[in-house]
Amino acid sequence: MVVRFPSEPHPGGDSGASEQLASEHLAPVTPLRRAAGSPERRRETSAPPVTRPLAELPGAETSEQWNNTWAAEPARAPEAPSEVEDEEAERLTRKTSALTIRQLARRGMSRWELEQLLTKREIEPEVFAPELDRLEAMGVIDDAALAATLAFTQHSRKGLGRSAIELDLKRRHIAPELIEEALADIADEDELERATELAVKRIGQLSSYDDETTRRRLHGFLARKGYDSSVVRQAMDAAFATRGRRGGVRFQ
Image (cartoon, rainbow, N blue to C red; front, side, top):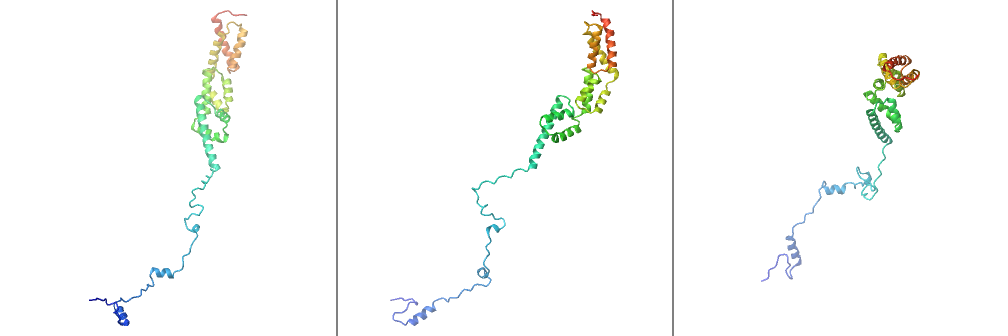
């Protein structure tokens, strides 16, 4: 027995009947329609996109900047002249302060002496003047205290009179009013007492000389110490008064 599918035409049968039978078994074809608002429809109907150059895009790098691995590293901009000058001025200011404090720790120096020292170290006045002003305001540099200290030390330890002390303070370029204040601390009685001590000690070393030579040498010694003529005369009289009591040989 032969089984035939309905879609197969019967041999020798009517071709029209076969086509009719086949069409009855095929599913109807429904054409697909795109919605008017679908994304595909919108892309078809919208205007073509505008292509902008890469350099115009915000944040985009140019072709020279992009993937520039082998390019030479851009040179760093030199520091501004003002910054270099400020650093140099700050360095010199620190140097000025260090030199000043170190010198004052070694011995007393007036402001003028410090200025001469800093000038020899090739530091310009425009640099060291403000720093010396600051140290002077702090009391680190004090010409008045220096004058008083020098006057006392030179009078009591070295036996100098007012004139010699005044000359030394002027040599240090201390202000005249400060010198006057320092010398005022030395009383007339103290100066005469110190001159007499020196004269008595010195006349003992001149025992081999006659009175005239001794007087001349003693006068020159006290004058070089900075005592005025009235103090020298009184000190010499006191020294000669002790000479006769000591005895010894004197050549006339």
